[in-house]
Image 1 (cartoon, rainbow, N blue to C red):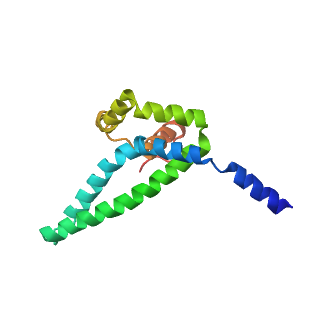
Image 2 (cartoon, rainbow, N blue to C red):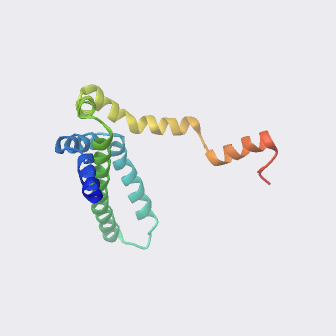
Image 3 (cartoon, helix red, strand yellow):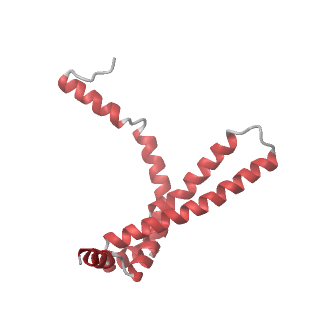
Length: 147
């Protein structure tokens, strides 16, 4: 009896097909999807550069392999993010978020995100959260100070 109740509760907690579709649509237009190509290109460039022993054809093949792996990983990420949105947002919220992302303002926003993040990193400079916490704790208590 308890097992049946648990199974029924689990089934009830699963998002509807519409929620899953909208969640995936939101993921496909979200910040992660916007930044992934930039991250992939940077990582692939670094990977190729770290293997100077490869000739031009081998480097091209490595880039092709990187692209194939990226596509598979991106699909898994979008599915997972879409599921999470579907579980956390109502159908009305999902519809509104997807509508915004597909609007001219949403498209402009997505186009601006990589530049905004790059600018923010440049303006902030080096930031080390753990070191900053330890320095503040040291100042307040005299303990855990850098040696």
